[in-house]
Picture (cartoon, rainbow, N blue to C red):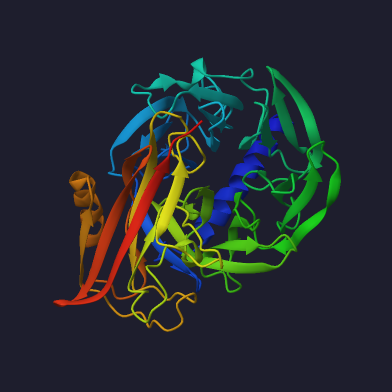
Length: 460
């Protein structure tokens, strides 16, 4: 007879695998109106979780098994650098920008039994954006191996504390708080999903997504940061695997399915509890994160070698409001607004602020720029999107970046429906600006010509 803790682990892992494998094979992910679906190739299948960091992505890859998984830093040009090795079952990944560290969990210490050298705990890798060599996970433990048996989602808090979901199920689930080397229970009596998912709202409420051990119904529960229960945000969900919160306050949740169970979904839940589906077509939607400056959603699909992207149309930068201004728009940063609240074709960032992707006051703003074509944009009602054949990209002062943006645009053209290119990093010196010009063409006819100014202000 297996020990009770191992029995619970087996049930949790088996439930996840049954849910994932019972779904249909991966098909093209489709965004709901207002969302543009795309993808970023991964260097391996079976991605476990991910987090945007700087201009790159931190991604857990590899199949479940003793010392079989690793974490890589994936650059926007596809270059992958392995950062951490000898993991077994990556539960969650987060980038703690305030302390410049990669946080991650592993919940595979006893699966298969006796073969892992570390696991069931919380880890931290310092300086992941410049690290150049792989290190063993066993050297990065923040808490002792085995101290969080079902370690899953991670949430770094301001000041350095960390919350970790321990997704044991059957009323034994909990949220653990790590502070100065000490683990304490913040919330107990939870159930499980493939993992407890965590998010903090703009109003400083903790949102916990879980799945009932008996009915497998998903829910999102509200707590304050002291661990007191405040109520249910949403119940009766078809699943709840991971979650992330947007700047609007809407919570995005993976792990659910369409009503006919033909595909897995990503749903959005407003602060008032209103639920809508923003994407379908996943085999099993798992890890999710949001790229802060662009609000682009990054989602993983179980067993698929790509990151699915969902770009919100209302975060795109249009060139204006005329009947031609939806054939090409820009993504990657937050647009400035006029006195009347209308989008301007300009991004203003301060060196070291949240929009500066390297997070340092170092004399420049690091940004990402991408193009979108044939956009159905409700902000430009006079414009009817049409297929775009080609585009011409020019940048003042930085022709090398223009080449990268051009190649990314060429990769998705001609467009037959709304499509967004991969993003390209661009550095803007403090006190200066750079203008990116895009001309969208149908044949030899220019159907939209936009220029977006990226401006960097000196930091304090």
